[in-house]
Amino acid sequence: MSETIGAHSGLHSEHGGHRGEHPGRSSNPVIKVQDLAWLMFQKPDLVRAEAFAQAFGFSTVLRNDTELHLRGTDPGTPCVLIRRGPDTRFRGMAFTAHDDGDLQRLASATGGTIVSLPESIGGRSVNLVDPSGFPVEVVTGTYDLPALSPQMAHTFNFGHDLRRVNATQRPPRAPAQVQRLGHVVLQSTKYLKALNWYLDTLGLIVSDFQFFPGQRARGPAMSFIRCDRGATPADHHTLAMALGPSNRYVHSAYQVCDLDALAAGGAYLAGLGYSRSWGIGRHIQGSQLFDYWRDPDGFLVEHFADGDMFDSTMEPGWSPFSASGLAQWGPPVTKDFLGTSPRLIRHEARSMLSALRHDNEFDIARLIGLLKVANS
Image (cartoon, rainbow, N blue to C red; front, side, top):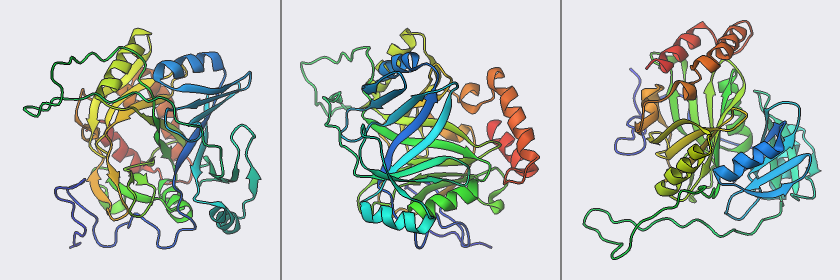
């Protein structure tokens, strides 16, 4: 019988891994990236994209006929770069390297070339492609935008612990101010190969593994992955990846200051006619308060607050993958969020049939496991 090691009772997961299971980190990564810098998208209508972005809580850094750069209130780089194009698509992500030495090591190990980034951003990058086909830039030396005036968290009375006396609480129904980019979630037909690439090449480490119901022996099918900053805490996940029938963007998440900002910002979005996908609730893996929205092009974006922060000592947790296990509290997970709504199901069915015809990790047994997740 496998011996359970690294048990997590009372921590982020009830169970650690079994001996011989994936360790969740590389023994000798090429480099260790520091953070997720930005995401890149293509959209046909930048005016419409900017209108939603500002209602969602971004500020505009650059806008012209071909590009739109969006930022949060934290100092640093823009966190979303959008180029005008004939259709809507995810065009990849950028991670921040520690220094030029890391870029040199990465270029040498991968056969890549160090190139200069556009003048509007500054710095240098090594441009890679992960095993799923997603473009990945690793950057350093970029311009740091100064901090903007932040949205302040409210002062709360907690039971008999009174911190607000002779003062009312009136959060305005206004856009939640995005502070920063938190994470991106991707689906991959080559999940394990892609996972190992991010661990071996960029030094990311796993916070939580999930496996399809009844299929733990086949290994994980979902992972929540963070940056390894040593003793400095990092987000529970900077990147999350799931095995599925297509290589695609699932959603991205942007931090706001507290629950009131998230809820009042959601009320503002709803008042403008934008579509909530799922929320408000609190996740299990990562613990974030969440609220998911569809942008006008159908892409899923999340407001989050109060997420878990782990240093490098935390070992991976292991748990079954289930729809009911996505939240500690909140409304039931929606068909829109799971991709099983009538609007999305035809595309998902085509993706499944196509994946089964090709040589990848998504086979019949994995399809059955995925369907069990959606119905759990």
